[in-house]
Image 1: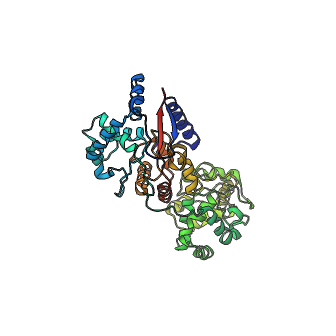
Image 2: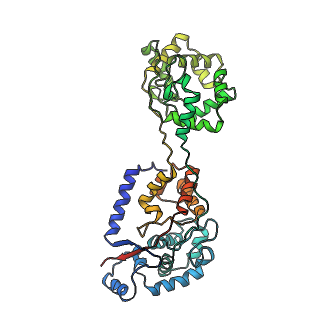
Image 3: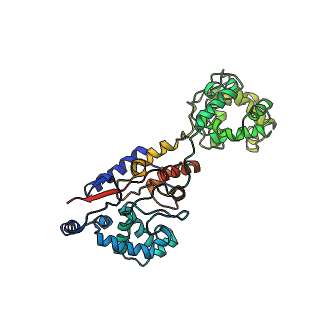
Length: 421
C-alpha cells in the first residue's frame, strides 16, 4: 500500500476537486426532501444550451420522465436488495434513497465494468445501458433519505492515553521516573520504546520469561488488558536521556557497538517494534541486561550469541555509548475519539455526513453494518480509493464500528443540485 497522505495535503486536494466541480454546479441544501434537479421546459432548455455535458454529470439534468423511467429500472433490477423506496432492510446492503446522484451513477458504471468486485451487483447491472443507469441513479437520489436506519450506537470514548497515565503514576513512576525518564541508576527509562516491545516485555515479566521478582509483582497488579494503555502512554511521552550517571568509555563503546545496529538501529534508535531502542537508556541497566544475556538469566539466543565474547568492561563501554545517544519517540499516533475522526470525515462527506458534493456519497442515515464493512474494505485495499485508503489505514476495528454507528445515527438531509447556465 502506498504511504498515506497527511491530512492537510489530502484536504487540499479534495478542496481542489470540489472547486473544479463548483464551476459547473451551484449547490444548495434543501429544507425538505424530494426536491431534486430541474424539471420540465427548464431542464430541456438547459440540455439544449449545454450539448457537451460531461457524462458523470448527466444525472443532474434528469427530467421527471427520466426519473419515472429510473423507477421502472430500479423495480426490475435493484429493488430486490435495495427496496423500491431505496431504504435497505437487509444486512450489509446500503440504502440508496437520497444518495448523491453523480456518485450513484459513477458507482453503477464501475459495477457494470467489474471494477467494484461484487459479483451480485455486476450481474444485476451487466445488461443495463448508460441511460438506464443514469435514470435509476436519478430516481434513487430523488427519494426521501432514510432516517434512523442504522444499527448500533457509538461507544463512549475512553481515552487510553489518559488511562495509561493514571496507571503509570500509580504503578511505575516510583522506579521509572515521571513520564518514564529514569532518575534511578539500574532502572530503565520507558520512553522511546515501541508499544509492542513494552507490552511483550511486561508479559515476559508476568510469565517468568524474564526473571525479576519486583517487576513480576508490579505487572501482576495491572490487568493484562491495560498493558497496551501503559505502553501507549510511554510511547507518546517526549523522548529524553535517562537522568542517571554514565560511566564508561563512550568512544570505545561506539566501536564495540557497531554490530548492534543491525537489530537496534543506527545510534541505538530501532526501526523494529520487536527490538528495543537503546539510545538514551540508563547505562547501568543496559550493562546489567548484557550480562544477563551472557549468563543465560535473560533468555534470547540471538543476544546470547552476540554478547558471548564480551568482557564486563566492554559491556559497560557499550552501555555508556548508547546511554549518550539521543532517543527518539516511536512513530505512534495518539488515538482519536469518534467525534475527532468524524470531523475529518466531514471535510469530504459534509457536515454530519450530509454531502453537498454530487460525486461524494452521503453517510448520514446509512446502515452501520454497510459503512463498517466499506471502511474495512478500504483499509484492506479490497475496495480501491487512494483517499479512503489514506484515511482508513490507521483506523482500528473499534474506530470503524464507532464511526459507522455515528453516521448511521445522523439525520439525513436532501440536497438540491442546480446546474448553472
